[in-house]
Structure formats: C-alpha cells, structure tokens
Image (tube, rainbow over all chains, first blue to last red; front, side):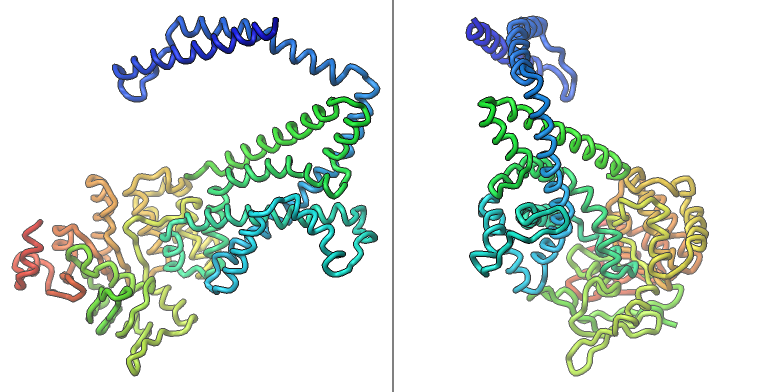
Length: 295
Length: 250
C-alpha cells in the first residue's frame, strides 16, 4: 500500500519537475535575463498531486516515530534524563574545544605563514598530520599515549570535576580542530588585499596595530561561514569521545539503546544534536548580520 | 627648501631594473606631475619615496631627514624611530583608495591621529570635521566606504592622508579607478590643495590636469627621466622625440 503510494508520488514529483524545467527553459529564451517567469499551471497541479500522495506517507512516518519515542512514558522520561546528563558532557567538550582551538588555530596559521622556514615546516607538518589521520585515532593517542610512550599513569588525574578521559578528549579535539581552523584563518588572512597593509604602513601603524585593528576584524567577517561549518561539525563529532568511554550523550544513547533493545534513545539523541545545531545556526546568523554594516 | 630629494635612485625586481638612476627634487610648495607610459617606473618611484619599496642604491631625503643613503655601494636605511618620524611627514593617496572598509569615514580619518600620533579623540574629531568640510563630505562622516561613490571614497582617502598635516602629499594615479564624471570632484580638491601651496607629487594620466595644476612635469620612460620642465612648456613644446611621441597620443 505505502510502497505504491510512495512510488506514485515520487514518479509524479520527478515527472512534474522535468516538465517544469523543460517549459521554463523554453520560456527563458524569450525573456530578458533576470525576468521572473511564472511556473506553468499544469506543473503546479502535478506537484500538488504528488503532495497529496506523499502527505499520508509523511504523516504515518511522523506518527510511528512519535509512538516509538513516547510509547512508554516512564522509559522515555528516564531516557531523556540520562541523555540530558550526557548532553552536559557533550556540551562541555564542545565549549572547551571551541575556547582552546580557535586561538590555537590562529597561532598555527601564523606559524604556517612564518618567514622562518623551520617554523613554517613544523606547522605545515602539524596541519598535514592532524588533518590526514582519523580524529578517533588522535583521541586514542592522547588518552593512551602518556602511558605507553612515557609510562605516565593518567588514571588519577583529576582537574576539578573532570577526569583524564574528559580532559584527553578536549585536548584531542582542540588539537585536531585547531588544524582545520588554522587553514580557514590562513585562507582569510591571505585573501586580504595588499593595499590594506600598505595603507596602514603609510599611515604609520605598527605591525601589531595593523594586525589587530585593520586585518583581523576583516578576516573574522571573511572566515565566519567556514568557521560556522566546523563548529557545527564539532557538535556532532563530540560523539567520537565514546571511544574514550566519556559518558557524553552518544555513549549514553548507545548504552540505553542496547539495554532497551530500541532505537528510541538514538532518535532522542539525534533531536538533541539537531536542536543544539539549530541554535548555533541562529547565533551564527545573528553574528553575520551584525557584521553586515560593511561589505 | 627642498621637501623631497631623491638622488641616483636604482631599483630592480629580480633581474629587471625598473629605476635606472633617478634624480628628483621637489621644493616646498611645488606641485610636480609625473607622467609617462605604463611600466615606465612612475609608480615604483612613488612607492620608493613612500617606503613601500626599498631602493637598491641612492639617497632619499624627506623634509630634511635622511631616509636612506648609500655608502660603499651598500644601502643604509635609517632606524625605526626616524622612519616613524619620516612617515608622519608625507601622505600617500592610492589609485584604488585602500580605505579601511570596516571603519566609518570618520574613523578612517581619525584612527591614525589617535593611535599613531597620540591625539585625543576630541582633537582628532576637530581635524576630521575640518577636512570633511573641505572635501564637501560633512554629511558622510558616519557612512561606511562601501556606501560612497568612487569619487567620494577618493576624497575620503585624501582627507585621511591630510589628517596628519604632512609636508608632502603623493598621489598614485588618483583618478585612474574612477568614472570620468567622478574624476572632476577629486581633481578640484587637488587643485584647491595646489592653491594652498601644498607640496605634491602626482603620478597621473590626466594630461590637461597636469598641465594646469603642476608647476613642473617629469616625463619618465624605461626607468629614467627622459625630460622635465615647466608644465605648460613641456606639454606644449616637448624637446625629446620620446616625449613628443607620448604626448601625441593625447
């Protein structure tokens, strides 16, 4: 039943899109560039028909999902509680990583652009290796490295409420994300027109004044979309801390899913990630807007 | 008194010799126009005088202070402190303005006054207001460069260069990036500055402007000064064949 419905709606949708493209293309030839062309009526009808077929399908899926998630109220509430706790850890990893990796990225970018060849080579290798190996592997190395390489036991390291598992994951994430941020910053800095440096130099600004007053504020605007990309990826990447058995949200979700023999915890975890990223998107949009006063 | 003295300036990029022994002296209050075909070394000369490029050999004196000199075939530039002092003696107006896009017009003009010349915000604002009045841009003080026309942007950049009251102002093709109808306002501003006896060196392709405003014209080609003389005379009655051929194109 649903198979047929889905099939019909997909075929209809694709057909209507193709027809609409053909009609629009044939019309475009006769219109000046940039003119708004109305979609032809038959296409609208076809799209509506596809929608009518697809609607029951979507409603059914949504209904089944909600039932799956809230079917057993008590389990749902306890799952939410545990996942919210896990989310605290995920958020902790996220926020500390942002705090450390952004400035570190700037340092790495500066290092890579250094005129001193050995320094540039060192940071080039740094970026190459951290971008070229799996993040999961890097996390494991930070966690197990101290013991296997130097015989340092890390089990009883504790800074405030954070044990070494948590700290290691933050170190790992920060080192890795700094490499990506460094490349974004480098691109932004190198895209600045030479004239900005020259104007600053002629006006007598010192090197650090030029950098912090003239160049960096403009670079921030240029790199924001790319940095936003990485920030959103980081939210999801925190789930990799599972390999260090940090009790972040994804670890919790996995445990709960196998205990309950249900995918429900994963769906709820997915919602958490999405809501978090949705808020981040809103914030990024606001920041971008606040810098729109010049172009 | 000479504001700018350049003696036997040599400058090469890799193996290409761009300046082959240039001598240029500019007296106080004098307006010198530098003309010539592209690639003739005009802009390079200006960039050397404004320390954006370092020369290979020769001597440059700005406002009585020695910027660099050649001893035993080696070029010696002055120390950082002196260089800072020399930088405050000249201003440069770029072909493509190079305004700071993230600063308002006011901040573009006052930033160096406050942070390099250690003036108070109030002092800087007074200087800025005066200059904006002169540039006919009073109502644009809080606008951003991206909201101004090319001509207005260039006038802001002239104001920015004038803010530190330099002894000499350099212009690197100030109207080349502008629509013909926008050049007029910029040229008028430069003319007014000439009337106030501002010392200026202007690299330009606007021949009639050079003739009318400059006291002296220098014609450069192939890294040397081919001919120089009083503006009107050089334009109407050039002596060198090369100059004649160049001016015939206008």
